[in-house]
Image (cartoon, rainbow, N blue to C red; front, side, top):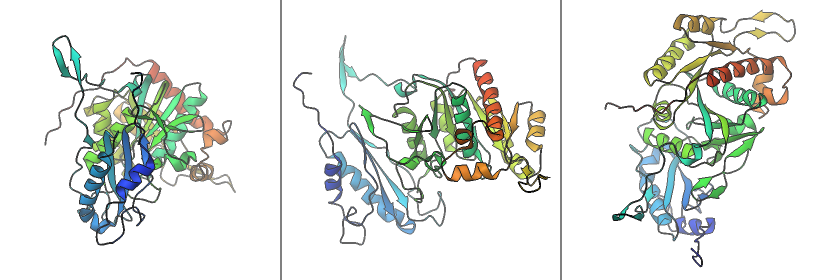
Length: 396
């Protein structure tokens, strides 16, 4: 309305509110002690993390809650999301010293809108969020186990789809091990986009969102399942993705909360399973295939990564992890085999340096291999009917 003053939340105001809180067992505030991460403000929403020693996470939970309350008291703030991160995680993400559950974020009561019958509840947001309204296809790149090159495959698949003329985005749903900032060589923090949305960052021409933009690279996350679900949901719905032909989602390994959340929250057009050729990896890949079948997500195909090694000195071929196992598994299960990616030094070094092989050597043999996979994925997407997100009941 004309003359209405819009309240702007500043980092200085948030910092001042957090300065009132003492670190457990210390005379310093959590800010002075260097325990507060970069503060991200998106409209009326505020996000930050508090670093806690892994063996004292339970003692820091009241501080986290008090921090949310302190920031929530600032004028103009509607939602606060404070999380605990660890200096190190001796017990891993699910260690017993992690908080047992993630409380919901603080929210102001929903405004009531007048209607024909008088005031009533505010209209519910669209199921998939306005930020996904212009995303044509969402695909998950998944693996049954870690260490098979899933994230590298996701990045190069996304870049190969872009090279094929599509508008592409990448969502890094691997909350415990976000790798997109490193793989794409992106630094920075998301900026507000108006309202409650934030802007994704961009790397090599693709829009990217990752928890790695909000916490330092070497900071482990002390997050239980509900926190993971909340983070993924926010990155889906509260990021201004714009118009995309394809969103590639880099899933965490395994068959847990993140996979179930994606199946519940968005109409996945399909999943790409990444495996190495050896039997141990294929056992876990079968679990991933079975999980997507149970939640009615089509499997677009299997990629055999680290398929073979060609010696750069003598040209000899060595099947370090075996060869052809993923192809045989795809044939046995009746799903498409998308292609083979070799165990190659250039792919590894490019990934470490934020220079994916498809972007830096688009005419090379390895880019061609990813390009062939991308064309098969695109053909599968263009021939598939639109899907609604399935309704899933989780039994406790």
